[in-house]
Image (cartoon, rainbow, N blue to C red; front, side):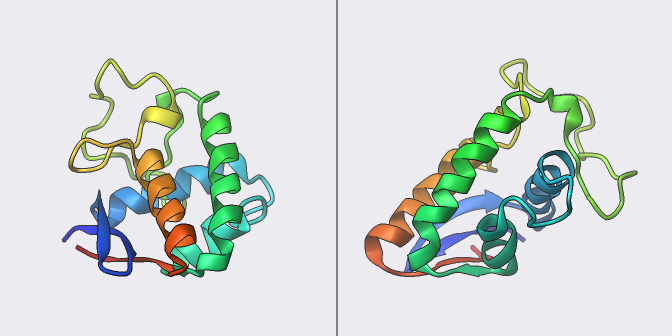
Length: 138
């Protein structure tokens, strides 16, 4: 099963649900010392839960910019595949492309796009179109 971001009828492919959860797990574990959603409430709240209202898209884009900047300071080995079970690891283990040098460029969609860029584009589309950004099956 693949999931993606939806704005109206337009979809941006992400990959597996586990892969998207790994991004959120990494954000929470590495950037939110006070717990899930404590620093990035729009990304980790309504977006993670499945639907971000269009009115919150600009705020979520600002949060995403901060997330990207902070993940760029962390090594790929700091990835957290599952915040609820830290023993879980990515299916590819430590075998990553040499072009991945930080956690900011670690997350690549199943069609080869930077996940943070894809999320930013989807958020921009939601704001521009005045429609919510939904997470769902593709």
